[in-house]
Length: 167
Image (cartoon, rainbow, N blue to C red):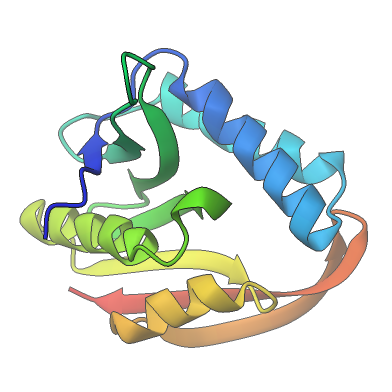
């Protein structure tokens, strides 16, 4: 079914949106403080400075605007090189307006397909135990939880999780 959603590569202005969405949504939904937004900004800046288009990719999900309105961004994800054989999925987010459309899975599937096509042997990611929807997406796509550790950050006691899947 054609849902009208498109996935495109990031362009100028998108990374500011990525940072803003992460900061605002994680504050509203989990009470995380501004240090999380700062972390996302650091990750985004690093990706923009050192982007390798031959081995890395980002996707911005959007739907066309109605009646001449600009397109609406609905989510994003990025795949970055960790080593010659290992890639990392980063900054997956889906806005509340797009939840339930399967967009998180679709974005994750793009990362898996791209990593496989580029010859990576493994795809890894880091998330938090309280991010239940994201963890479900990863588990349904064959990622396995390989390590967990409690830590304090973003104003809360959290449990960080490392996941991976062979390609």
